[in-house]
Length: 215
Image (cartoon, rainbow, N blue to C red; front, side, top):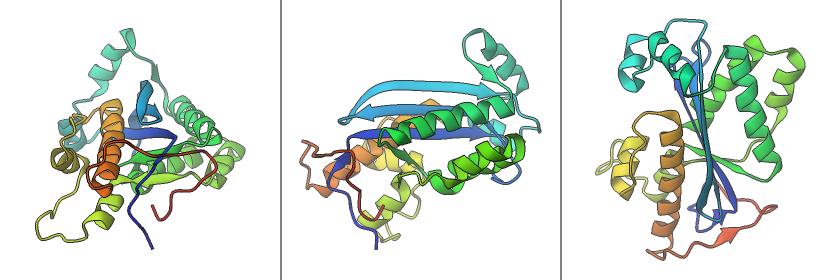
């Protein structure tokens, strides 16, 4: 049974992707964003882009504003990779942080971002690399699921996307770019913990080796 969180893991990594579409088995990530927090404070952020091997849907493009022309323009200022290199880079970052004890934080992160990365890895990486990623039991905190534990009623809060949660918890939204949404997800989690502690802003840190219960 899930429970509300009253302590914050020492190491958090906000993770988000912008994608070609919504089908995790068929679509690709075209940007990966990571925002690392230690002791409740941001310590690093990283974003890189991917030229996909399939079309970017009109609906996705309207959300994040990325198309092939924009991706090519970003080569002058950002790292732009192919699909396999992007998936490998994302997996290396996530597994490295996992070994340090990190929890992955996001909105619908297990069912969407991580699921799409797993399907992509199985599709474009060698079998050993894909299998190693599949076997890793990542520690994941989904801020949407956590919010439903905090307040299960949908009468007054029927929508709980990351944008809606940012509004509810007075967090600056990410703006549908991967690194911005990764940062926003962690900030929402920190505010959720403050809420659970009846407004107490001094966050108790959960050290590595301990487990967050229920989420």
